[in-house]
Image 1 (cartoon, rainbow, N blue to C red):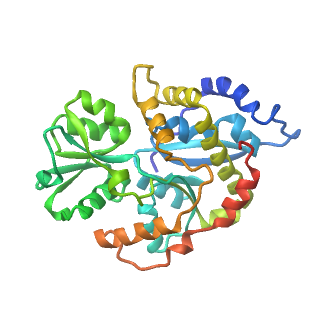
Image 2: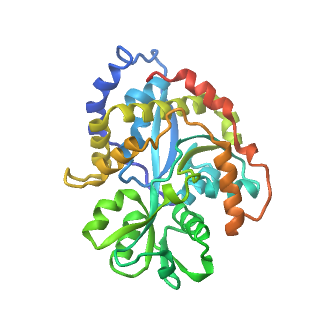
Image 3: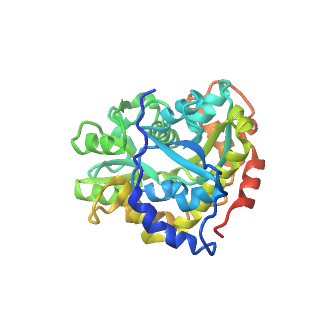
Amino acid sequence: MDYRLFRKVSASTASLVPAILTLFGGPIHVARGQALQPWRHAIVEEKGDAGIVLMAGEPAIASRHGLNIDYVPLKVDSLALKALLAGQVDSFEGSPGGAIIAASRGADLKVLGCYWPTLSYGIFTAKTVTSLEQLKGKAFSIASPGSLPDLVTRAVLQENGISANEVGFAATGGDTDRFRFLETGMVGAAALSTEFVPAAAQHGLKLLVDGRTQLPNYLRLCTYVTGAGLKRRHDATVAFLASQMDGVRYAQLHREETIALTRRALNVDPSDPRPSYVYDEAIKDNLLDPTMQSPAAKLEWMQNLLKTTGNLTDSFDIHEMLDASIRIEAQKQTFIK
């Protein structure tokens, strides 16, 4: 499988360690000869929320839980799912759509929890477009079939009574690529993260449909492992989930450090509005859940949605994907309250 490893953000370590250490009153003590356990976690390639997504991997957090977390960024969450099922990574995070479809076909997947349970996503168009009806016959830019942009687009069309057969779908890559396709007029609309709202205004574009309003039950980011992997690395799985919980909580409490980590991960300067826009949106609108619940009702809603859009044809009990015991154990191991 072709993927690139996440480049270590070494500068962030020095800046974050002192602040994090103050939260639990002293340095991290690793027993002599005790090596940190490696953990490989697949994510969608870094964007404006990178500081929140990557915070769990900061050594002062991950080491506290006995882990060395390597991030594997991929273009879309459907590739991250494939990496997990192929045994290339220990876990991945993404929207549940693709995972539900895979599980319905027999994939051995478990949802550990969802730290971003609300969409910060939507459909962007030219400023002159006033309704989805005007986009009939036009192409919607998505990442790939079965990816979050694809499924969000189909869900929005479904909610507005428009058949997917009345529009086109263009697989054009990551968020930045999709934004460029829309900007140049090569597509009529694009499913994008809301971090592009500031840039859209500067390029004659706008957010036409806010996914959070249109699809309030659509889960954005959940964490998954395989059932076999969970049995094989139970304790490490608990530790990783605890690291994610602590990472999200720390990010909530520390705006400037989280935004700085995002800027380093993206290698952008302070004039780029995306890191601060995404962070402030997430905090102001309470989009994050550091307890990482697995909302069964929302997962059931998504399962029904996928049936309606034709993405899901096989019946199965979605509750087989849930394992609350790992989340309960992980919460007991968190140190940032």
